[in-house]
Image 1: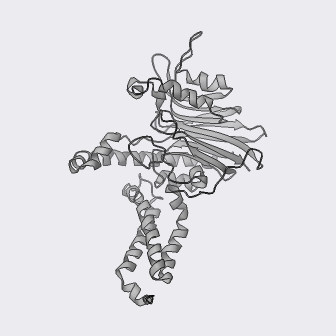
Image 2 (image 1 turned 45 degrees about the horizontal axis):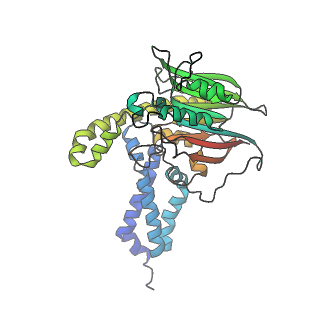
Image 3 (image 1 turned 90 degrees about the horizontal axis):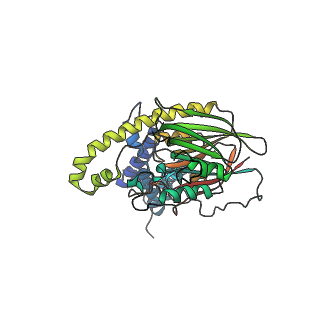
Length: 377
């Protein structure tokens, strides 16, 4: 077995210099997650490279373990210190199991969150499956969740004596014994409601809507719920600024050199506008979270990746359910862009995360629903 090279020789080597550069890259990218795009938008683009930097740091640790264990201590230390950031994109809990009901103390709460894409009400959304609006509403209504948070919600008024499959408040709420709170961003000429909704098997004792400049589909809502044991919790449901980019444009931009030239600059401008808007919206929400005295439970379509300012502000204050108990990437976007997790649930320190699941078997929207089980300590 060849002798290990001396430290002086190692410090002069190209591999060691590359390792230092990778470590610097990791630290710079993590620092950039703390910078809102409204203050310095290029920082948000640097944060997107963090998964690559973390992967290269792990590769460097493996390389030096084989070459010189003393040098390997440096990337290994960085790997340990940045493990929570690694878990944001690739959670590793292969041996996790959800305790059975009654097996562990604490008030158990089941939560479902989903961007339902207005239940595919428009013909272009349900042309492949005309029954998808009814299927999606029926699936949501049939779940055993105590709390349901829906983004891009849609409801048509119930007509006496007539069954309307799009009367979602009635089907998900009244018929299943859940109270409903709908935060409406628009009511059209037939009385149909667009916005977001929270359904609860627990009494709703308080409620409110938070607008970002003006009331659109991208806003926030909350409901205070009284649990059977007497505790009151607050549930936030929010939908941050959309990326404003068509999936086909993104695919075209990287599928060919001409596509990048034709689409790339426009996509970058729209992506930048979305980053700035979401950073402002997240700052508005975090101020509200810090003022709340109740245990918090958050459901959101962030429209942002786990390596972003928006996600970082939440991860600094709350537990992400997928990062806490999941295994794998946990992608939630149902489209041609792979490995995209933009739908999340977060809880405060008063909660224990027992289970979290992404429902890949429910393909009716462009987002997969998520469900979680929590226990209040």
